[in-house]
Picture (cartoon, helix red, strand yellow):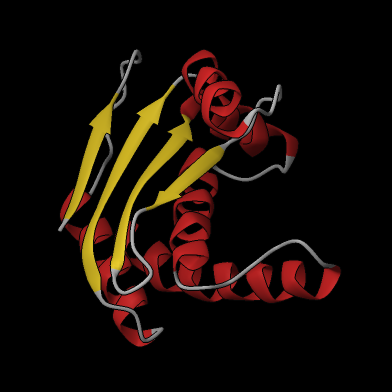
Length: 140
């Protein structure tokens, strides 16, 4: 089950059924088993508080993923819409594309992909681009 929520912002995700199908397909084709993912869209301030409280990091970030199981995909994924907007401008991409990149980034972490080393970062970026290529046609 995939659900979408907001905290302290006014935001509505477009094409929720298509996004659910896309993420479910990603998990299935990557060999994972989906139990649930709650996507929580929030502000920089909200995510910064979570980062401080749970991870002891005093930084702004675009995403924090909390996995709850090693057996199946069970997670809360918090995404800062403020960061997505800013990063879209910085990277000269659409808001939608940056949002999809961040969403699939969190899912790929749950599937075991890392991003600590340069090799891991490249593998993660390649997978992000592959899966973004699968969702972008759905938005036309």
